Length: 295
Length: 193
Image 1 (tube, chains in turn green, orange):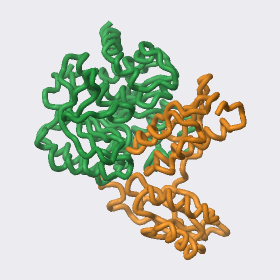
Image 2 (tube, chains in turn purple, blue; image 1 turned 30 degrees about the horizontal axis):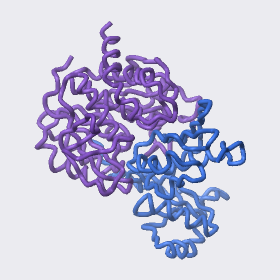
Image 3 (cartoon, one colour; image 1 turned 45 degrees about the vertical axis):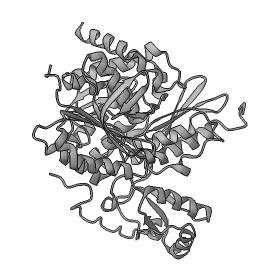
Image 4 (tube, helix red, strand yellow; image 1 turned 90 degrees about the vertical axis):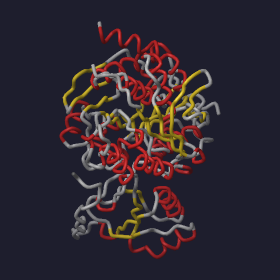
């Protein structure tokens, strides 16, 4: 086990409101909801769901909550550009021990700005990427600079397609039902589209290091979870918290994957459930998953 | 270290004529932003132009982007249609090698009361009885959460089509999933709405 991450951990993403501005600071998740630097943030899906899940998991693990850099961006990319510029200008002052990049406009120049800022830190932080930023990381050809990607099945096919600049252009032979997850994992690594570790989300979750499958987490199964917007965000939030607590990447992935599946058992959702209904169960899900890990 | 995508890349070779390859007469229009591509496609289709959205050739890619493929010989009239919509392409070029097709495969999962349709990285889940959209999941571009908030809780007729408000390729994938859900759950097939 690594030492607990004493430097701050920064989660970088967006909220779907162009008028939100740019907010950076400590996160708080309590009975009043989610606040970042004292600014209330609605939790419905996306980066706010990731941050809320990370905060809930940190509380369960007995460690301080992460910091967040949130930009208002409803899709035009201007808010994401402000976040990228902030990283270029301010990241060295924060000196985070890790970064989790999430819903950001997948712009290559912005990606490189963020990655270079992280690489210029005196001590290299752990780098986790999901969602739009993961798309840009893969597209940049620098996926292996990252410690962890957390793709779902459709995103894995994109990572495995060396030609696709976005999941929208993933070629059919990689995306169809005949595509084999193990082949896609191998292909993604060999083609340079995968990070050093991957947590592949699906009917069976896979923990992968350098293209090699380390663990499979096939259950418990709650098929409705796939339909709920934000269940990938809770998973990335929990794995972020476990990394902050000093867990090695493969262990953090195993525990987070099992805990996310246990959320489905504990919350008993339907395909119509909101992700906010899952977050209150994170503490118990993590406790059970950590117990299973040590059993 | 590898340079950012596109920098230092060799220009893609222009496609050589091959017999009666229809691509001879096709061109692409590049715009400043994905949202403009979406508007341009809608305007040109409404005017009767056979157009489609494609991935740009490698040397034109900047990130979350796409181009409009159209009949090159009709460029002047296409530009007039775009001008009426206050749109102007940044560049127009012949179709060349390296362009990618948008995703065209769909997968659906039947949850009994609900049907989930996936296109690329986007999923939309609909109550089969009421045709109300109950969830939107997947995707990674920043407009996805905004679109989800507009669509969830509305029927397949009442919900805004993702491309009306979308800005990114994820919104385009969501549009495809949305249309496929409309096709699989037609209004006259037992809807209560």
